[in-house]
Length: 216
Length: 216
Image (cartoon, rainbow over all chains, first blue to last red; front, side):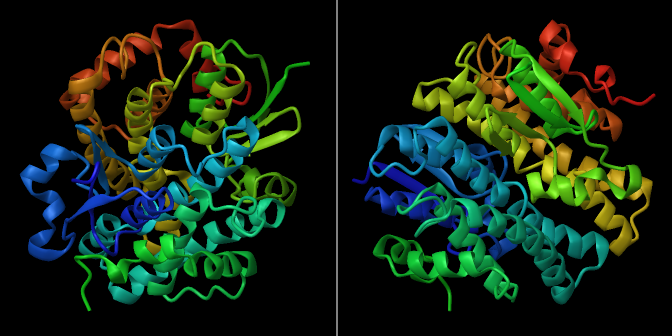
């Protein structure tokens, strides 16, 4: 039996981050799909809310410890399985990587997650294109700042020449950007790093389209 | 001269988090006010964007290292000035505290920060009460989940009997909740912990109303 259980939804970018981290660390995990759309969203069911009151994925379980929040989960993985390290131990390098993660974690993703888009549709009459436009606005702002940071700190990956947590956050956000048809032409570092990551087996195994609950 | 410089705005809840962390660690810092509203917002000025491309506060400088993102800044402070520790070193305890921080950092604050509210006003016709209602909706959802976590993990503070990063995140969010007139009656743990923290000198010194740039 795998040490880890991951409650995930194939298209959830936050779940995708934790899948990449698990794959980079070569940790096997049991995948449990939570369908965020079917029947009004399985994340709202009382048995799932019991597990994670925020009603979100991912939710990572390891030896009876259950953890919501992808950043907390990745920090935890780094503590219990330090190789390869995804957040450098040096305080300044660690801060640089965390800053990149949080630019996506707080500055982009929360504004275009499913719950927010559904609320905008229900209460503010945003249709599909309206929601895509809203999402693109915040992604463009965030990616512009992220790209600026990469100019200073990127190597082959977002920070230096090995994958870090910043890459675990970037690739799923680029996946979302493509869904919402954001033009990535203005972000050459993001584009280059995405190509590098997407060619790696660990990142490939974490891709939405190959998850057990993926739909055509 | 103080070791730290903090670019801050008195009412910014993210700046308030880092002020609390600096005060708990008894670190002196030079306060530099960035007025988020005057003249269209000083955070958009090119000299500030040069420093922090996201155009947000806080921005912490320590020995030529400049850091955006409050979570990254607090992790950094914990690394360079470990006493008192705000994020426990034990992997599980650390994960619990980080999870609480991120519930606010990603689940609540990004949806009611100034930039988002201004955008909702400009592009979706939300007036003052509409913005307050939008903000209360996300705070209520997030606080409900946070309160559920506190039922399991709280002691005198959010996690155990000493202040942690979770308290640095909670108190500024409660400050925002009061501004938007959220009824906190349904959140007894949050209310009790807020009273405990607000009675402490370190939290008092970080309060918005006593900052150099505070306005009546």
